[in-house]
Image (tube, rainbow, N blue to C red; front, side, top):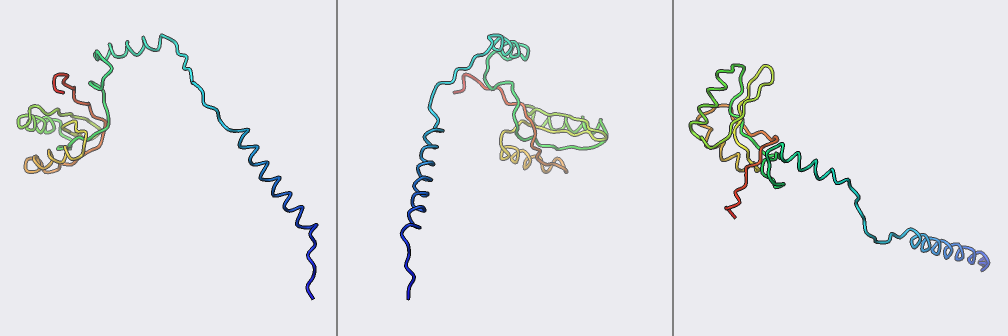
Length: 154
């Protein structure tokens, strides 16, 4: 014979479930965020300090000219002899006079790098052109000087 299920055991479970749902709904309404305006209060000296920084750097406007960003350079010489480093720099500048070159020294080596490329593809083109002239050549990701923008070239 089957045991009878008493109805008085099911009612407290339903009541607890309903109470739980009501509690969840009430808490979401309580913690809901309201949209508003954010007001930024700053000292007017902040603007004058920014303008002073631009004037010290020789930048007339606040555009991207004259700033540095991360990009790529082509390293085409690494060695401990300073004279060889400057000779390699001169050889490259004779071939590409418009290209900027940089010499850095970290003991015990001098490293000569060229270019300020925004993309790796631009640096790859230079690597392909210089492959026959320089034996150890590769691309390095580092902070570069952004090229100056020409306002007439829109």
